[in-house]
Image (cartoon, rainbow, N blue to C red; front, side, top):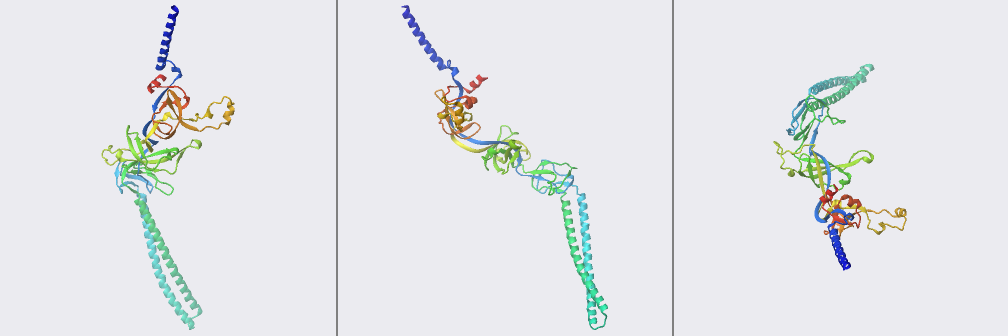
Amino acid sequence: MNKKRMIRIGVVLTAIIVVFLAIARKQGWLGEKDLIQVTAEKAALRSITETVSANGKIQPEVEVKISPDVSGEVVELFVKEGDQVEAGTLLARIDPKIYASNYDRMLAGLNTQKANLANTRARVAQVQAQFINAKASYERSERLFKEKAISASEYDAAKSAFEVAKAEVTAAEESVKAAEYSVKSAEASVKEAGENLYKTSIYAPVSGTVSKLNVEKGERVAGASQFSAGTEILRIANLSVMEVIVSVNENDIVRVAINDTALVEVDSYLNRKFKGIITQIATSANVTGLSADQVTNFDVKIRMLPESYSDLKVKGQPTASPFRPGMSATVDIQTESAYNVLTVPIQAVTARQDTLKSENREQPDRNVEEVAENKPEEPVQEFVFVIKEGVAKLQKVKTGIQDNTYIWITEGLTESDEIITGPYRAVSKTLKDGDKVKVVDKAALFEKKK
């Protein structure tokens, strides 16, 4: 009797233990060490936009640098930074004394040359009269000589006087031409001196705002020449149309095109995004650094669209832009969009060699070094881990464009697939095809790690 009772007790205890183990395993009390904790998310249809990010500075789209054409001391400044000016407005004046003096000297030289021209013309009239007399005397002497009324020496003297008078007429006429050239040269010098005197007054070539003033009254400035641009006195800009100039890396520039849209964040306006459009892409690169460390970038100009900041007005200047030249900006250029496509988080995609091929598996019957030497290197491909019945399955995929969060899966997945998204180290390195996993909440996963 005691033996049968013991058997019944053993059966009952065995049943209890079996039930307990089943519940414990279901609840995760047992076998926890054999499971890798991961976060997961189902592939879903979304619209994504690929962007190229860059940093730059805000500048006026039109800004004119003004330098003087003559050198000297700035004796008057008629504007200050921020002033609105119209084309033709007097901006500054350089000391005109030396240029006025030079103009007077050149004008006096011109008058001297004109007087010299008048004298040479009078000389021509004089020698022409002498030539006429010498010619008449020569003709008379020639006739008398033929009639043997005069001697040969008298005839020769008359002929010589005629030739001299003729040469003097020619010389006088050439002197007139030379004097006329001297007058023209003097007139050119007067004109140049007058222009230099006029250039001591600097006028605005365009309408706009004085965006930068580089000199003060009393400073000396250098005039522009063929060897130098001269001293930049100030800048006039159209502040109603602004642009962002950014540097885009050579790897990204091929994805950027004219008329691409962009979202612009300006440091001065937090939590605000403005719209822009690409108007110009540099054809030549800006190279910084040397040898292997050099960085190759291309300048891209993005016009700020006024409708995106129409609510930001400058007091007293309703047409002016709220942005100031030199402000820092971050730009996201929208290069391509895809709508209602299958996507997964970017961190869910890992790049590995194709470990699904049979030749990549371990071959215990062959020498390891021989296999390593003879086996060609497998190309790196893109994979995701799909959860099937608590097991991570490595799935090859093909991808398209991506934004900052999600990437387009063009082949390899369906909407019903649950994809492992973290932790990053597991997805990218440690997790293997066939590993058992347990899906946990992301917050709980990282809280446990802490």
